[in-house]
Amino acid sequence: QQAQQTFGVWPCLWQLKVSEALLKGDKDVICTAGTGMGKTLCFWLPLLFRPDGIQIVVTPLNLLGAQNATSLAKARICAIAINSETATLANFTYRAIIVSPEQLMKPNGDFEKRLKCSLFTARIISIVIDEAHCLTNWGEFRPEYKELQQLHYILPDTIPIMIASAMLTRDTLSDVCQLLHMHPDKTITIWHSSDRPNIKIGVRKIKHTLNSYADLAFLIPAGWKVGDPLPPKFLIFFNNIQDAINAARYLRSHLPPEMRDMVKWFNADMSTKFKETELGQLIVGEARGFATTESFGMVRQHHDLNDKVLLTTGRVWTYQISSLLANGM
Image 1 (cartoon, rainbow, N blue to C red):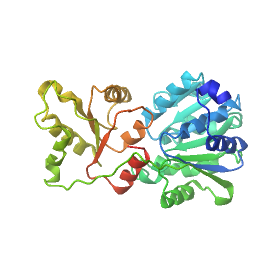
Image 2: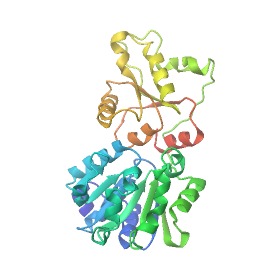
Image 3: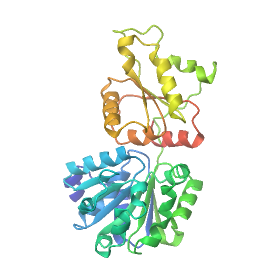
Image 4: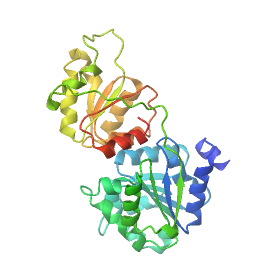
């Protein structure tokens, strides 16, 4: 009932089990569930039962942190997304702190000071690592992810670590648990199916050279002009930013000059504010397609894209495809 009053939803049994485990604090928690199933609610439910409690959520993208802070503000829970601009001691008074691994594990940073303060750690309910598969997938180019292995040595035994993801394969889960020193006898796993019956997988044979991007031409109907029905929305995923930019430019060349802004590239090099604006245009239909990278898959889960989205993949690794399917695209 408290959840319904605060968040406007009735939690499911599995969400209550996750929250109960975090509040007990005697075991780490593994939570696997498909995107949109409600993992994020599990992060915040414990705050309803610990009025002085703090939840710390580690997120891979600043944009996700900002989205979480905004949604919590609507529920009248004081939250802040900590980044390089907001990492000040004054901002550790919030009840929900969303932070990147870089800020959390920064040597001699404000977090390090706070985590050594018993008055602060006594209020921490748990530390949640969202999109936990990133620990292994992104650890090579974001080394702070691997530094998270120190958490169990820094934190008191009373603070559990929770990992959450829609795509924890058996091998990935094993690697993550080993990295974070999560022992089976002190870990509880709560699994909710990530099956997506609305997804259909199709394969198109490549007929042209990859760097021509000509195999993507079907996304824009031949001869399309202003006044014709709008093309269906689409997302094209690439392994690198330059390929995404080149593909978007190719598709834009198939549109009348005044309509070329319907197709854009979207990547991590853009500012958070700019990405929010661009995403909003896709949601309302002003934009029809993005050429993007894997990071959009995580951003997408926090927004409502009711239209059917046509997913095509360009040179996408196997684990990325599984990620996108788990995210319900």
